[in-house]
Length: 124
Image (cartoon, rainbow, N blue to C red):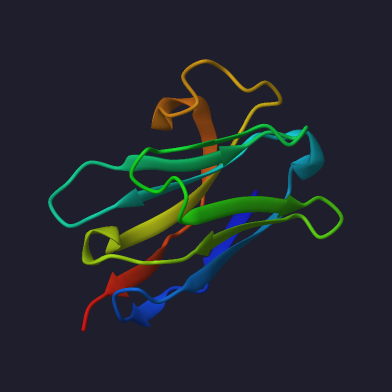
């Protein structure tokens, strides 16, 4: 199993970035996919989730600014991040879960596989 996240970088406040996660080695099209992030000195926190059927949830802190999507033909999950703020600075991880979107989709414990992370820095 491999999850390869990319697209991070340095961006000014108010800017945009698009993260991508390429998956292989499991049945991507039937898996719940999520993005989490971890800022220095803080716990890993949920950002967004998308089920194989297209059900989507966001953390309140990113709602209206971030958009998660998936391309099952390319085994890829995307995170479009707009109106970025300094508090969005973190390492962003993609994660793969099972086939069912559980009621605790926001918990890292729900996910079996993790990518290596990509650093997003929002600073002027």
